[in-house]
Image (cartoon, rainbow over all chains, first blue to last red; front, top):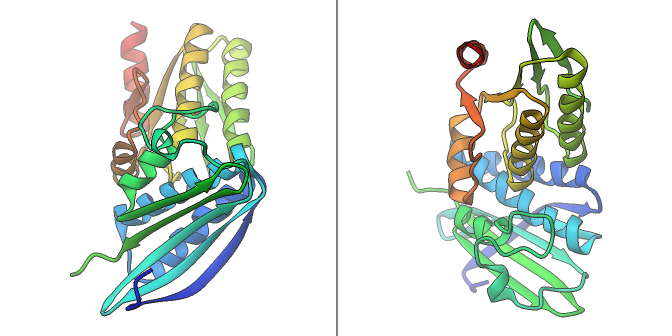
Length: 141
Length: 117
């Protein structure tokens, strides 16, 4: 987070089951629409949130998804933080490669979500959990 | 929420009414595979018009569904994928493989009738 950015937390959603995945993506979509995202951007945000929330349910529940409105000068954006205290990702670089999966997934969750958002960071330590932070900025008119 | 499945002649139509959880999607897949046997259906149409997200799990489940239905001797057509959803799916790297798609119910029925000839 840069010094000139401001953040206001919008929603915090506990993630324990597949029901919460739906809740998280709906909340993300609602908040994104409120700050000016439209059309395909709303779907991309909801899809990325769905992927990171599912990672928590499949590998590391319980966890949480925190949605915040961020500002950098005149620009507004949505920040999604997906956090858990699970086993962590042993090899983050490998997990970011298309098609890599240790579960029943397609292995597109993390690399795919990165393509859907503007910024994407993974912080993970074995045994200490994972925090995925992703951001998308409202396109300038 | 369970997806209602309607029988229409040789076909069954599953019309998704609201956002679905992973478990709902798996239930739909299994229900459709069972219906095809019960009604000796030749085709299955899944209407996903209301879905505002097709993530990796939904896409894989739809692909599995179509494969299971095929193994039971019928065809599957997915209808109503919204343009924004299609865009996000492509960005995410998702594909439906050989699963047939159509814009709407009418086209899906026409496709199944054509293939059934």
